[in-house]
Each structure stands twice: as structure tokens, then as C-alpha cells.
Image (cartoon, rainbow, N blue to C red; front, side, top):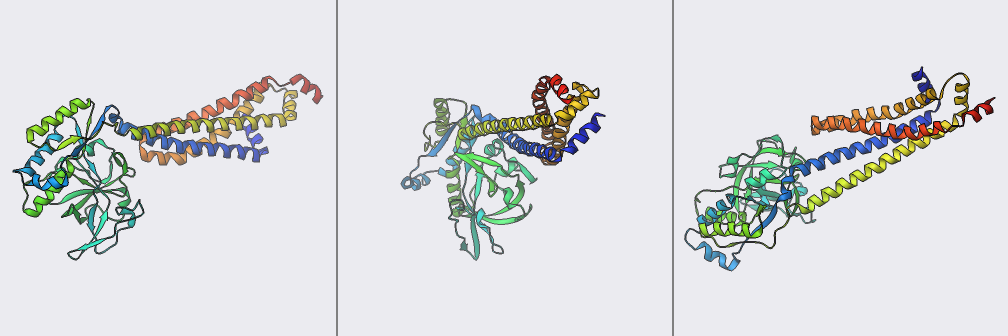
Length: 423
């Protein structure tokens, strides 16, 4: 009986019914998008939450250009530099090396899109160069040591990730490609790349998920980057290899120490390593910084804005339903009185209205959940379960807070006066 009455009531006011459903659908679509954004932001925050307690101590070599050659002329200079890097890696705190050194990618048979070139974001992409009948494109690349790779949210979508062995010298240098390289190169492709003046044969072993990032002062999103392991090398084979290793090791010692300790303790650890390997040419740069401080502040601000916007939308939706339903009650006084004269009760009338609210909210909620559920499932099954629960709570919240003022209006209806008017 109630189902039939609700159906007839909704059909009599089709424009009204569809208008409310459209408002609810728009609201639920919006909060669904906000849920996805909120989930992704929380996921990012969760991945890097271990940084909260750490301070970042940047390192800088203190070798000025005019003294560099004198240092290389010292006995075992390169070996001492390698030992110093080994000491940083075993310092007891996390030594993180992240550097955006572009590499020259050799492509004679096809052109590299400008968006992958160094300088593209500043509007000045580097032009290609030619050497030994090869064309090299200066593409964006980032080099990471093993600790940096394990600390940051770098997720491989297809293929395989770096293994510990990949951070040591190998005949073929493994690389990971940012998500935007999908369809340009395939997993297993071998390429020629020039890094710090030396040609390497590199092999694509994996493709990253979108929005993978690392941090060095600011976020570096890797979608258009080639990710390389900062390898450690053995004994140089010739003078050219010596020169390359000198450039490479002098670069990878300029990373950062992530530690919970105060500066004087970190300084003491660094001085001990310098003394052990006889390499005095390194210093902590300035005062310690909070790693990802700007990022955490931005995440917290985004979460606050999402929550505030969701509350505003929820209130607007509830007010809209309440106003429209109260207007409908006022417009249907005559039908309500006929129902009461025929022996009906206010409880029955209220159940009819409650049924309408359930239908008006339930149908859009089910439709939007089915549509967005498939999208959320891509994140994880757990995210889908949370999303369904979230949508159910949203629908219940709308129904409850829409029905309360309608119920209060029913209690205030001047029934006796209306009945006399009908007589």
C-alpha cells in the first residue's frame, strides 16, 4: 500500500522528483570525487608519515673549482671519495641522494616529445645534440640511491622494480620510466643514454604508476622522468672511466642526512666518517630543515578544504530537500485532509513522506555508487568497501536530517482547523 502511494505521489510531481534527484546526484558525484581525492591524499600522507620525526641535513662538498684538480692529484683521491660515500651509506641515519641530472637519450629513428626534455617546464626545452653520428635528446632524469628509492612513494605499475644489485655496477644499466612514457617505450627495450659524459646501454625494466614522486626541496613528480639507480662502480678501466667516476662520486656525496638527532650529534657522526677515510671536504649546509614541511602543510590544508567543502555541500543538499518537501506538503494539504477524513492517520502520511525521501535519496545513491565503485576498486578492494560505507553514511545522513524538520512540521499541522475548512 505504502509503496503504491509513494510511487503515485512521485509520478504526480515528476519535475519536482527529478529536480531533487538531480540535486542529490550532483552532490553524491561531488563527494565521490572528494572521497577519491581524500583517499589519495591520505595515502600519500601515510606513505611519507615516517618523515614527520626527521630533520634534513643537506651536505655540500667544500672543494672549490680551483682546488679540485689538486685534490685529484692526491694519492688515492678517488678511492677515498668512494669510501666517504660508503661511510655516508652506513652512517646510522638515512643518507638520501636525489638528483635531477638530465641524460642524453640517443634516438636516431624517432623524435622525443618536447614534454620529456629538460627545460620544458620553463619554456626552454634543450635542443638535441649530435655526436659520433648519434642524436642525443636531453631528457629529464632523476638519480636515486637505494635509501631514497625505498623511502619515497615510487610504485612500479608494470614490470619490476629495482633490486639491491641494481645499485652496483652492471653491464646494462636498469631504468624505470615515468607513467607518461607508456606507449613510447616498452619494458625490455634497450637504449643508449649518456650520463655525465659516458654512454651506457640502459634497459627499461618497469613503468611507474602515475603521480609517483620524490622530494628534494620540493616534490618532483616522475611521470615524465627516467629514474636511474645511483650506482657504485668498481675499479676504472681507463682514463675516461676515471674522469667519469670522479664526476659521478663528487656528485652523489651531495645528498642529505635524514635524522632524528640534533645537529651537533649528526655533525659528530659526519666528522668521524671524514676522519676515518681522510676526506675532509664535506660539510653540513646551513640549519636543518623539516623534510617535506611544505608538502605536509599543503596536504593538511587540502584535507581541511575537502572536509569543509563536503560539509557545505551536505548542508546545501539537506536544506534543498527539506525546503522542497515542506513546500510539497503545503501544496498537498487538500489531499492530506481527504486522507484523514477517509480514516487515515498522520503516522501513515508521515510514512508516505518518509518513503518518498528514501526513494529520492536511495536511487541516486545506488546509481552513483555503482558508477564510481568501479573507479574506486582500481585503488584497492579496501577502498571500495570504505567508499560503499561512506556513500551509505552520506545517504543516511541526508535522510535523517531531511526528515527531522519534516517531522516537526507534521507535529505542528493545524489538523482541526484544516478539517473544519474541508467540511
